[in-house]
Length: 77
Figure: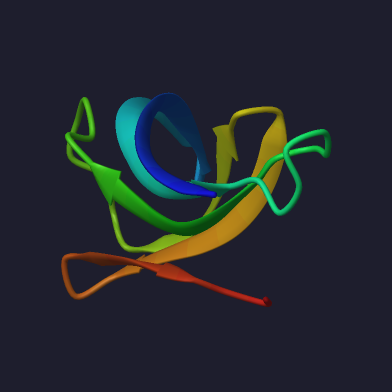
């Protein structure tokens, strides 16, 4: 089963930290199995951040991301 969800997240890096909203797809392959999240998208960052490398903390996961050209991109995945 796939469900679109929104979660609170925190971005940290380049000497900064900011809260954000993260949209993702929650995937549960089996009804009795664990869920995983995919296709993260960062929105509504609480303050302006400089371009660079960050860690996104959301739903108990740490995801390496890069802010470049006004967009949040996954890195190292």
